[in-house]
Length: 350
Image (cartoon, rainbow, N blue to C red; front, side, top):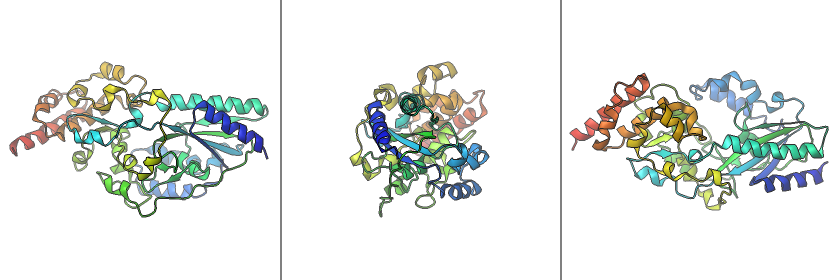
């Protein structure tokens, strides 16, 4: 059953730059519907209403495109050249998630997927494909686990024996029936490093995430002010959080990323909070042109920077926060007031 085609497809995908490929059936993940329903019913999705609105498709990949016979899952490496945890010891600097320190992976991965998909169509002219990279109701991680790329660790992210933590996922749904790969088994054992390092306690239990307490969710998806209880726990993380990924012992097997467009831009590895907080909309868009950071907009970004300033214990940054007390955006002005109050409290304790 298309064994030779699968072997050639694998070679083509690796030649295109993907690090790993696996294949499963759309119906190979029956468990995700109940898991997703439980997640949404408990409110752990926070403001991500699209998870509830498109739950039927997200919980059943076969319903997304009933004609699909195979799901080709591909891994794209973005392994950092530096330790993402180092920046946390520099409170006057901003921590930006590794994946967002250069070009937006959506564009890069999607173009690569389309090239692989076109190759498959050339071999099977009567077939059809659809490609997905985070922009449709597709549960990539369970599908990738079913396709043998890795397993969902206790932090709910995908891990791999030979790739570690640092890889993106892309999917090609196709009407071609290809041989499938063996499902990967969980290999976390008794380790709980990812659970213990989480600053906000976003994991109610192993393999469970409460997005409402996750710093990645709070800095990227959450609109409006963040609960004051959580702000001090965010530290200097202003876009995403890599803690649970970076601490994973499986990263000792991580391969080096070959795509230079993921290599961190020097100015985004440890930018100064006092410079980022001054950005107006035009300057923000210019600095983050082509970056996934751009999608959260200047106001949410500066809100995050102000929380980091409030957590810095650096009195020198107080003036930067003071300048935004009357910002037109109420969430920004609220964050500025909070930052000033935090620094005033720090100063009074000296």
